[in-house]
Image (cartoon, rainbow, N blue to C red; front, top):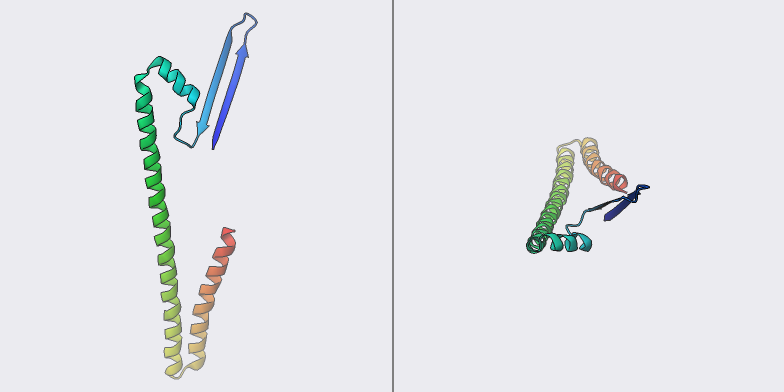
Amino acid sequence: MGRHTTANVRERSGKELTLQQHDTDSPIIPVAQIERLHQFRPDLVDWVFHQTQAEAEHRRTETRRVNTFVFVERLLGQIFALLIGLAGIVGGVYAAINGQPWAGGTIASLAITGLAAVFLTGRRDKS
């Protein structure tokens, strides 16, 4: 996303001042600025393009890295949720087998209900 701002000021004597500002999240420099740089220092134009390419490669690497970490975090979250749910069910079955059917049913139900509530409220908060 880019934003280009230009301001012009003229005095009555005929003097003029122009101010230009270009903000962008892209590492690409506007063509007008590259042309001015070529007029001033032609040897720096290639350097600017090499730096722009290096910045773009760095951004791609960082984006790939962040996406990998997000994927791993979500996958681990699902695995641990599965383990918590299974632990609750196994604990409930263990209690039911050892003579406490109501306690076992309650433990297993609360484990599954708790995970379902977290899953559903987590989905609602993101949207």
